[in-house]
Length: 173
Image: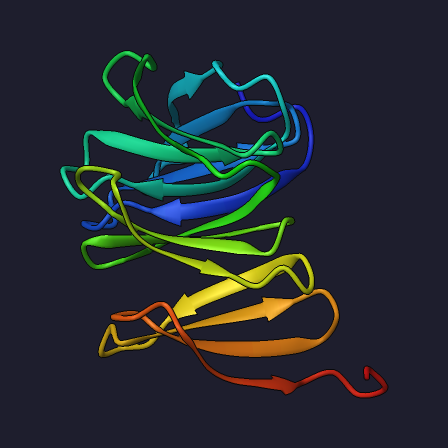
């Protein structure tokens, strides 16, 4: 069946054949993108599920929750295949970028993870505010984070150092 509460995020499988959705109902689901038919439901989160990204093999999904956990699970049976990391706080987003996944969390930390292994490549620590959004530049060399206080910060992927931070929201200090 469908989600019983808000859908917080959606993500495409690389080939476009499936779409995953995660919800405040504490579930993650995979649907056939052509028909909308439910393929599988993952029920192992015990908190609001906020982020989703497909594993590059197309057979697994990553989902993140309000307790800071990022889990990897199989589409074939809806069972957990591994814990990726514990971000320590609410993980708002998971964004797939080629062979990487980028996270953003309420504690001001973003992680760049290897999309196949789930291992942490780099941690970006901006404790000034909750990170509401993240993205990786097309060349893969720079991460951008957007914070609740209205700032955008650019980070060097190689070193993890802050390159630039600026106010992007009018009326913010």
